[in-house]
Length: 319
Ligand code: BT5
Image (cartoon, rainbow, N blue to C red; front, side, top):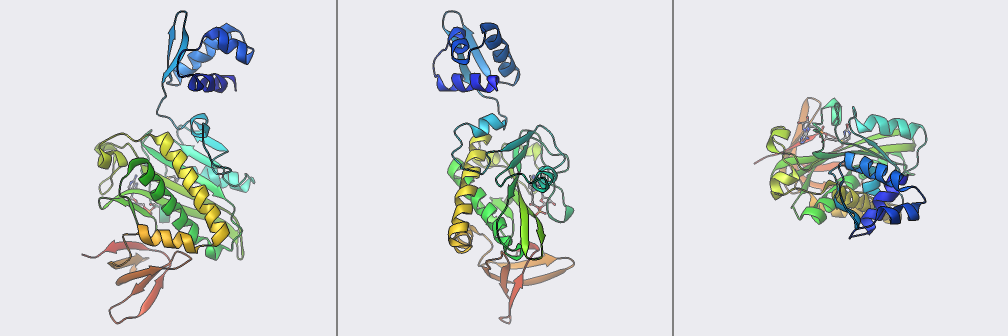
């Protein structure tokens, strides 16, 4: 699109570039250049125009526009095809629909706000506008559904690696899918799978991160990267880094299997080694969280030394 080409030219020119030069490079009239510059300004781009010098890009809006995410994104297939929405019920539903339509692996759905963002078991995911990252990613791993649990771990590990890289914050993982900072939840992962008994058609990996939420944009027990870092986080950079980390770990998973992902998960976990209660349905198991299995199950050792495997549930760390 021409407007994106103009943006690209502005970005690649640190100083001023004349309307004449842009019109020459793109083969369009100067009036058209002026019109597109107006469009960019309305999108929130800060562009100054100085007589005899031309245009200069001074500021980029805090929006996860696909052309911003794709600009210098160094992945091969993760996030190369982006569906972007200002407001959506849930990115999971759109991604599932796209998955059923056969969209390629790596297709990404991003929303600035979700009105029905969801967690596991129909729980709600609070998704205020322009504050967080809410995404769903389509993957098509050639693995039986029983082994797909590892990809939830992979998403958690990748998110932690990306957050650490961009913010330096000491974020950790609470089994199975909570991202924790200062003992509070800062993000979560939701994996949904479309499969038959022995074949995975596709998976949708949902990731929600509280990024620049102020206190008023957070539910109790939650925090955001900004609250902990005391500074805004560039959501575009964080999303790009996240996509890159997911691709890196996904390729590693294909090459070497679940083992290296589990190893990383162990190092980033706050659950292992702790005494925990794991609630599932209306029951709970109590014991020491001793390890994690390659399918993502938690391995518990109870007081009498009995080892039990828990496939899903909610963990509470005992004091
Ligand atoms: C999760 O579920 O933690 C998975 C959350 C996945 C959200 C992403 S956003 C993009 C994609 N589209 C969606 O619709 N969903 C995914 P769970 O472990 O069930 O945790 C849900 C619980 O976390 C809720 O019951 C609340 O207690 C809490 N919670 C809700 N919103 C939160 C938020 N923004 N920050 C921290 N905690 C939250």
